Length: 305
Image 1 (cartoon, helix red, strand yellow):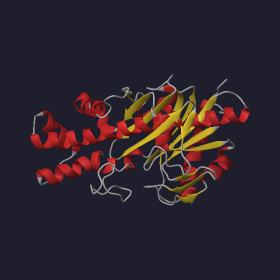
Image 2: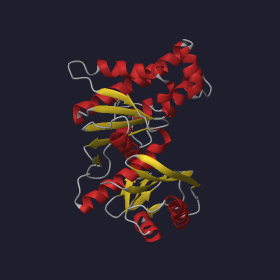
Image 3: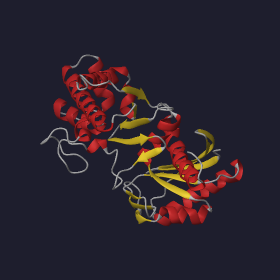
């Protein structure tokens, strides 16, 4: 029987901690993420966690969702974007010493997606793919109670798929990736070029809703490539459902219907996979971090996850 677990969601500016049971947040807190080095980050997480546990009661284990890349075998953050001093940082060993609990490390995007897989939009399904469409594009692949990490921890990096050889440069240095074409910052780049001055996505979508041809062209192009990306994933992984999250989903059906239409066109003659919207919001990170720790604990104890 599952018990209470501590979920930690390490972010570039804020770190959230929560006591979670069966996907339900029982108590939560938040602390600023220090930009003064590894030791201060560990101390901040430990203080917030121990204070929460003093009021909320004991837990069986802790899970940490962290930006990466990560070394899962050694429990190390190889490098964390936007957090000073987290290079080759032995975060698991340090937190276990501070908290006196077993700690499981997971990529932060995988953690959020795993929360949706077990407790959110994909609950009860045998497999799912989480896709976050925001400033960048990321994802996670889930099968049963497993986060699919791949041989080098790169599984789910769907934003770095090359879809347009010779296209715009992406954050990984490659040309024509999905993220370089369809992410939020990519749409803003295209809007700035098309309109001749900086245009944020909020204004871009306002103009598109008003029928502006340039704005519609930019949005349609991003949606088209997102649909292609989803169709490619089906032909490789064949999930039971996609779960879409991230800031661009807030544009609602005006944008999501364009993605669905592109996806359907590129799935002709194939079964059409369900597309659902993420349900857990800001709690997904801590719920997912707790979930990976719970699964690890149950496996250690020989219980079914």
